[in-house]
Amino acid sequence: MTDIRAKILYGASVPMIKAFSGTMLNMDIDQKNPLPEGAKIIAPNHPSMIDPFIMASILGQRSYILITDVMFHVPIMGAYLRRLGHIPVAPGRGQIAIDCALEHLQAGHTVMIFPEGANSPRNSGFVKERTGVARLAIASGAPVIPTGIFLQRDRLQTLKSVVSGKTEYSHWYLRGPYAITMGAPMRFVGDVEDREHVKDAAHQVMLKIMCLAAESQQRWYRNNPPLTGELELP
Image (cartoon, rainbow, N blue to C red; front, side, top):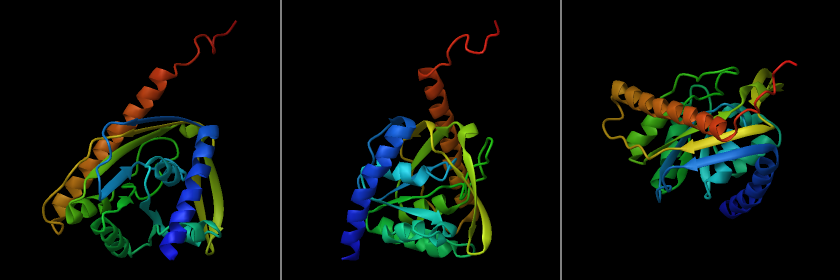
């Protein structure tokens, strides 16, 4: 019964998210390959808090997303995330989240993880990758789909909130261009206990994500050039 309710909630959520993205965002999506059947790992960069919702809405299938535990303590939002079966990642309890994600992959599900582990810096750049994406890929054998997101960071709205007595800051993107490039599947094998191998695999994924994010940015500006003369003085 719980899974049926989750499917109903997912089915109701997707049209609402698409209505938001279709109205407020200028979407530009380039998917280089069809998504593989069965278990797979979607790995995007993370410039804003809306990324999990937008990505989930474009996949065309239900996914299980690793999301910072803080979000599960936000009223209403937390209940929504729990009912959809998303995976909380709490400080010091990362292995529990990885184990839960592995169970989903073993069942043939789609898992989404943001290798940065947090929002990208407010102005530019990326957070150094964490190793979760590599550990999932090596342990499960599932392909990683690197994904690069571009948005105009000067449009980000920083929200200050208090969650469980702690002040939190988050970056929300409510209007503007939003370009996505989904790359070819990447596969990794080897010993998941080999730390250097795991770190190298995670870095390979992050490098590809960075390239795809740059490609998203270049494609957006190529297709939407600035108006000539708009800043010229009389």
